Image (cartoon, rainbow over all chains, first blue to last red; front, side, top):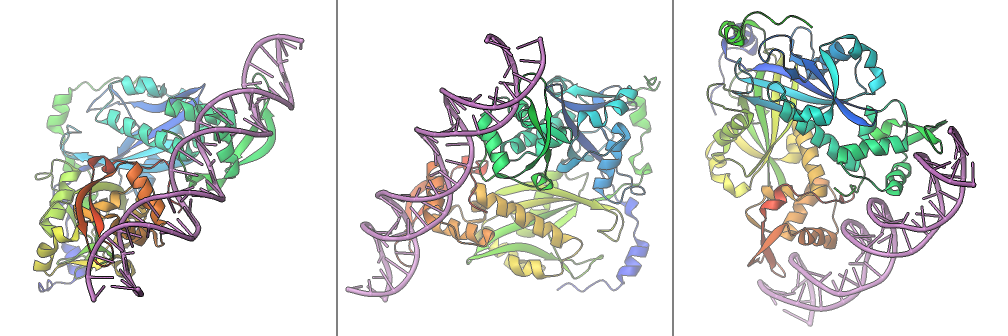
Length: 243
Length: 243
DNA sequence: ATAATAGTGTCTTTCAGACATTATCTA
DNA sequence: TAGATAATGTCTGAAAGACACTATTAT
């Protein structure tokens, strides 16, 4: 056994100076997806200041120890600043930290994935010119700031996986939606068509959605409008759709 | 459009002082599991200094911007310091950051889950007295430093999930192992018995293990010794075992 | 031979895939 | 009515659960 220090914890804390040690820069970045006009889109922000000034980036910002009680607060603050609202689905994805990703020095960013209905923040986003929804496919071909291309690819891959065993992607739709709508969203994530019957059957059997009684007619037979049940947020099917 | 700053990025970086802004303390903690004598165990370290001096904690440490190129380096450095080796399986799990978790101030820790064979570091661990393997169940009942009880619970839950759709837990076993051995490990994680036939069938059909030709006899009929194929690291079954 | 453990054969059950059929709207 | 899209019926196939059975060791 090492002998314990002779000073008390209180004395230790009184003396402690956090800024005495070199520490990474700490940020939070969010990958906010939506589904609009048959297209997966992601929210990007034009960087107004150095470094990487002028480039498009994921919405993000420094953790503010004074304003944020925890990391989730930071993520929500950052997203609200760019969309005017807080998305109905937000989840921590991964943390990226290394020497090189930011020219200012050793930096670390905690990445969040979030989903929102396009209409829920359309007017806000349209009102500013440094924020835009970009089609996911073109965003992934673009040069983004820092390692955001990687964060974006990882977030998409995670959401793609979820499309195989959950209906979490539905949070990218309005509160009420049709099953064909949800199916095309899943198909966009998976990059391939899904069997209609299987898709509906598993959702209905697991009782993940509630029929509103309303219908939406676009062309052809009207589709039933559903609302997600809260249990769908965490529900996972025992069996994946084929990858 | 905002006008871009007139100074160049190079000038900006030359002026930039990272320590001018308050930043969280940044650490990495690792949850290292093993399976020995029919028991799940986790590696704990006795804290030699303030804060939480004398309490048991997960192995961890500050990110060292000078020594670590990235977060993985930090995780491996921390684990090597406590076990003498680097585990064959290590994966980032989640990041915990808030005002309260560390009395020194706003702090953030990136949690890693790792697996290793007990024998691979037994002698090293036995040689020091501030490190020990503790049965997972008792560790979870103990008061651990900081929010490590939560990190431990989350890591266990993630590994439990993996037991349902992969054979990743096998990295907690020696390089060669028997299928009954692997099955009892999965059963320990899931807290319930598994059907023998199903367990073997899916592993064999997916060709996740290689027969070494050797047998191990404990009592009764000798069991075949297998080695994991590299593809088992990332393989996931299409269908989960029943939760 | 018996006890103990490893490993197999095979039937049932569950649920996704395939695909034809029916339903309900607009023009 | 035709065209379009939504929704269902029903068969097939793949893979997990149940469980009885066989195989191989030590004592």
